[in-house]
Length: 207
Image (cartoon, rainbow, N blue to C red):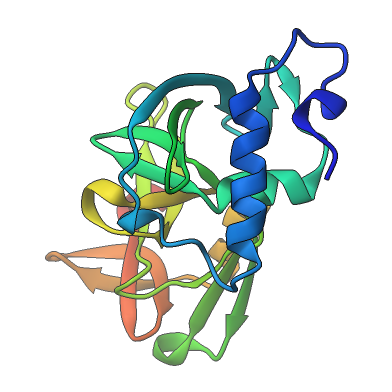
């Protein structure tokens, strides 16, 4: 495996921790499925100069990580604790910066129609999730502009939840799969999936 230093040869010398994390993630991924990060509680080893941008791009030492496979490895050992994000192995935990959500949904597929509809999302790092009680949708509204930002829960729950921001093209496609339904004593535009209705915006706001 090429090292992070190979990927960012124009950057400052890398922390040896980055290579160790990549190697540990590669070993864990060979066992099939996602590594059991919820069972790992290694000592904190400090912060790594790694950042996940709002559009899902991963940066190391200020430079985008170009290898998709390497990004997927790092995403497989993501962990959230008390609102902060870490990359973890059984023996090491390092903090990273996440500008918005740690994952980024880039595609949506719909099966069925109406209340029988099922919506499947795919993230930039290869995760798949069907909108459901286990993987709810939520809409955040900008406090100034009111612009909606959609998210779907991909892994974990409560304080350990890892959400994916849904990209704009997928959000626009979601509109095609939506409908108006009574909700909380009002009419809402939203989406059905897995027998649940996920409200997006009041119908009156679309008039």
